[in-house]
Length: 351
Image (cartoon, rainbow, N blue to C red):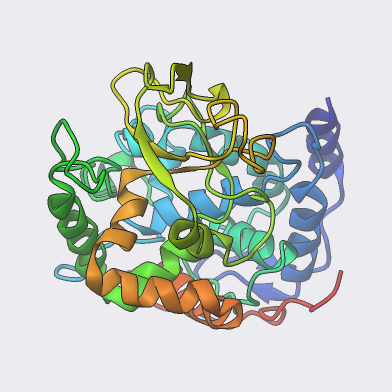
């Protein structure tokens, strides 16, 4: 109901005074007003997940940008191909649930004719990151929307959570074939021009937000105990906690995995052994919020080159904040030609 009321209000509002033109659009965009509408929207439905749309918008911007390929300068944050309901990009399993993000942002797009979907999706993420205590990331508009879904690159450019792994675990509790998955993560991000340090910064900063949903990806639960704000908890917990690989029917000392972090049949993920209903009764953290990690997260701990950066961010939240901000800005500008610095590119430090 709150979302419907908000949509009606922004849809009926008069157009704001223009302040700068969206490149190539022929329309002026009041970027400050767009920001304010995004702020108003961000926490407008306290019943959604953890009371904020920020993690959903951060994921939308990431996945719309993460198709970039430096070799031929294809993909990237321009295009907004996911908005086509019959297109292939929205049907990519890795994009499950992102139709909700687009739905929530549609009233704002309708309010500002000169605003491209591509710019809106990125700006929504940057507003969400800063509002949740993350880095202030400069926004530069200039992304163009594609005219047809066929302009989007073929699916398969986003990372898979269990790519290249096999059944069973090794003596250290790592899924068999994890080395293939670590290489897959590198292949995906190297293709875009990132190095190992930037990969770890992106995952440590990005996966501190939100949660996996059983009905979308088949994975279930939050990465951290407070998934609505920026922190280095993802990195710290990955190193400090005890993690066990589980499936839908896994039992721990005869007890099923806590439903809040139990994946769908056929999926595997790691969960905190000492937290949740499956934890030993003697565990002091048994009644705390259980957490999960995807197998593709755990390779940051298992791969020696990734781990050296993970350890830095686990100890230094400020370093993560700076480096995540730089890496996320780079991600969301890949493949974009001409960009402007909008007059309200730097967000205010306080709201």
